[in-house]
Length: 175
Image 1 (cartoon, helix red, strand yellow):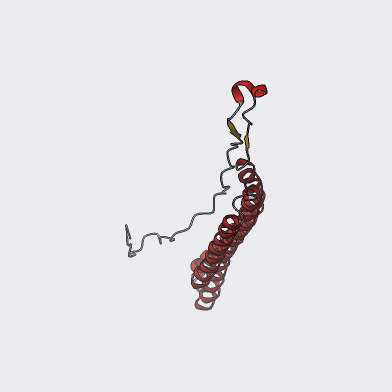
Image 2: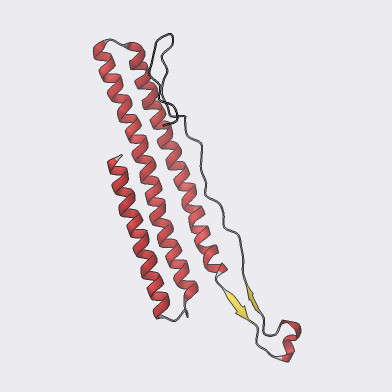
């Protein structure tokens, strides 16, 4: 969890730095290349957030796999075969969740790239000159407004506790 927090904080700081750099650049250029700046900024922040989401998913899956291995090994040495099987199930679940994370991040990468291009296109506007030949359109501004593609999320295998049958256990609810 600590590694995930550190990775998330570092990448969030990088996204904030990219945003402020390109906002400063846009201000310095007087908004003359806002479309290009928006495109590059969207691509970079999208790439960094994609890396963050992918690494977070991989860390979660690796944690699950390692927990399963530890449960399995400790249970084998104590002879608790039911708990050993729970460890095997946890390892398989972690591996499946890792595979889901990788597929999801691959699809998400394409969605983020398309959304970056759409965001840049949405900043384009055309001012129609105030000439008589344009009739009712003169003096108006037209722009592109293409909706962005929503984030892509695949369902994961359930997480939670294994409740032992016919035995007492402590439960904390609503925490």
